Length: 353
Image (cartoon, rainbow, N blue to C red; front, side, top):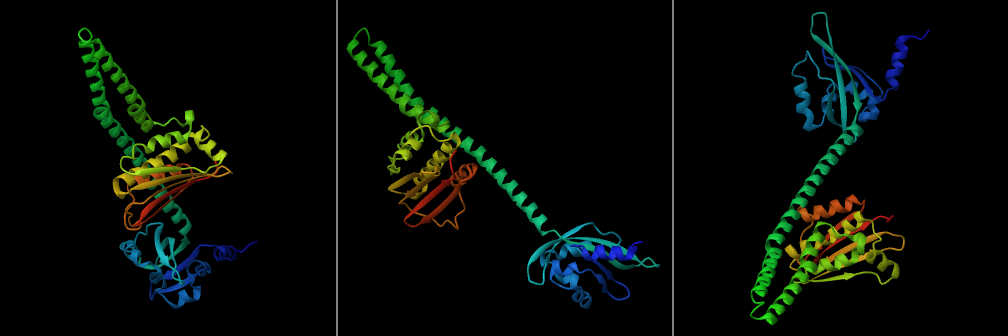
């Protein structure tokens, strides 16, 4: 028959949790500390026996108030207590402490027993999950903000430039109608000019708004849309697009070969980069380089010669965060470098399907 005391001691001494019993009366001292204390804290049981205040010394300075608060009512011990501790080697770990009170015959708290478990990995996973959740929430807010920003811009274009040009076209048509009987030749000229204006509205203004909403890469490919995009910025600064002079590279970008989500990510990175150049850089020129590789990967780089900024001290703005969101959605990598002579944005994407 197995001796229950021997069996229990073997379980305790083989456990990765630290088991302990701390005497309060008549003098404070550790009565028992299991061997796992060495693995958790770096201190042997003998070192605990030699220092009755070892447990208090191990508590991280920022969590000592938590421990003191938990001792306020010695008739009840919250279970478990999760705090940080500092190991013998100076590392900070998270531990979960379960305490059980022991009373003497007079009802005085005479000792405390309990277990201490290293929960650093679990705590780190919880913090990582919380950070990921916060990042996801922030990303969703940026998506909503981006949608509202796009709606505002389109509304301004519809009620501004496009509406004004349509009003001009309508006025010209009315003038042509009014003059048909008196001067048919002049009315015909006005109608021809109005037709040209309407054609320009359809080709430039309506196309620009449609591209802002959703560029249809599946029809003509990414490169034509990017060439149309840079026209919006060239009144402010010169923009050049570079593509490797290889047939497969041109084919990948000029034809509807890219997945729509990837094409959209590349388009938005270029668009937001050029927006930032226009708003902040005071640049004379910018260069967009598209680098498909023979094995199907893709890199897009946007460089300008404007006024750079300190990347480490200036928090990322809406445009940069939006680019990071689009690149991250395609499991890509995003880099930003800046100096007094210009800024470089680089986004690389993994192998394409």
